[in-house]
Amino acid sequence: MSDKAAVIGTFDGVHLGHIAVLHKLKEEADNRGLTPIAITFDRHPLALIDPQRAPKAITSIPKKEELILRSGVLPIVIPFDEELRATSAEDWMLRLKREHDVRMLVVGYDTTFGCDGIAYSISDYKRLGERLGIEVIEAPFVPGISSSAIRKAIANGEIKEANDMLGRHFSLSGIVVAGNRLGRTIGYPTANIMPSPGIVVPANGVYAVKITLPDGKKRDAMVNIGVRPTIRRGNEKTVEAHIIDWNGDLYGKSVTLTFYSRLRDEIAFKSIDALRKQLDADRLEVMKSLRN
Ligand SMILES: Cc1cc2nc3c(=O)[nH]c(=O)nc-3n(C[C@H](O)[C@H](O)[C@H](O)COP(=O)(O)O)c2cc1C
Ligand SMILES: Nc1ncnc2c1ncn2[C@@H]1O[C@H](COP(=O)(O)OP(=O)(O)O)[C@@H](O)[C@H]1O
Image 1 (cartoon, rainbow, N blue to C red):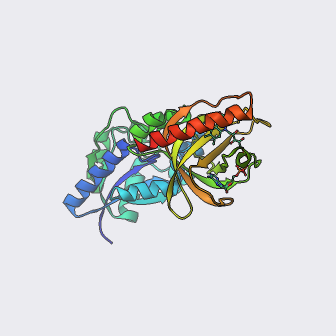
Image 2: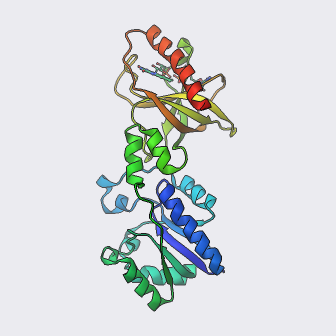
């Protein structure tokens, strides 16, 4: 087993700030002939500590692993449980050394790991590392980017802002379920998508997206998120996609929506005809916005 260089964190979203840390880790690991690993948790620590305050995630665990791997770092997902929560910073570092052969650790400006970590500064971690035989290096800091700011932007429908902080397009996966089969009668069949639970859903409104179909192909689509006030029967929030110039059966299949921009708010139209006219205009707008 080769020796490792590690970083620890939740890494929700794997945004541009995380990417800077992962690249620094990879560079320093390569210089020392170490394998770079990111130790990350299977849930947000607050899900255990204070579930009421636990935020919805920007990325699912598999997506997070994929994004970390893409930056050249090996992800290791460990359960954030009571035992881990009660582990001190010193025990954490001993564990890293014994279980993962860690020789170097990248610590972020606000990293606190260990139940007593809140009292640690970077120089404390460095001193502890020296004693235990782990070199501690400070991670770069990218100002103005955080998982919580991205969650907030998505929840407010500020897709461009969220995408700028992510350095990629926000995406949401889910299974296609049956709706009330009205869409096809107005010329706009829609795949009703049940998003993976625990993932943040953008604010109600209409969005330009690319949809990844089960065969892996990407198509242009327009998505409505909301309660469909024109035809509403209840207050259920739905996520539905009309795939432009496409025909097929998606029931029960998994798809991924990649968000590019937000077009408008949801509107309560006076008639289905008025809704249809707006959908014609949305279609042109989506095609235009995805071409840019
Ligand atoms: C791009 C798009 C925009 C939409 N905008 C609105 C809207 O502004 N107001 C509204 O009441 N419904 C809106 N809808 C929802 C339609 O009312 C809905 O797709 C239609 O009633 C079909 O429902 P069904 O899939 O359950 O059959 C929109 C749907 C799409 C695909
Ligand atoms: N262009 C398309 N965009 C989205 N779904 C489509 C399209 N063409 C066919 N479909 C299929 O039709 C279904 C939607 O038809 P619709 O009448 O809106 O019914 P529902 O109320 O079940 O959503 C989708 O789930 C999908 O399987």
